[in-house]
Length: 158
Image 1 (cartoon, rainbow, N blue to C red):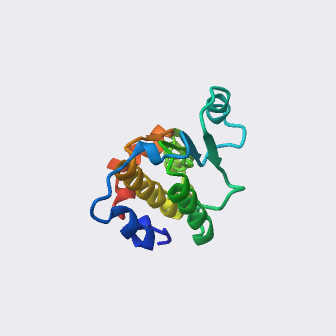
Image 2 (image 1 turned 120 degrees about the vertical axis):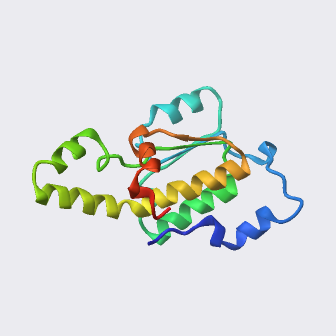
């Protein structure tokens, strides 16, 4: 399973070496939105309020690939956002997916395959959560449906 864990990077040792204390003073960004739409109202409003806000969208990198994940970790490590908001895809865990899984074996198999395909993104979300909590402490899931998967067997690999 692909996921460029922040724990496997050389930066981990630098940031977690003895004597390091998480510090909001080092934050260059007030808000980083991940997996959001380009026209996100949250980022727009934060900028209007004078906050330093940035988005990481599909145009910045495909987070299912090593290159996209590396680009995200580069932003996280360089910008040290105070607040990370993450909104991963939730279509395979929504109410309609659960309903459609009961309609036919083919639909069930397609949805299960989609869930397996999303494991990379869910693992990345988990790693960003761990990093952010250790570094700054503010992390928000914008998708309650995906968050529910934390207690489901789809998260066993995590």
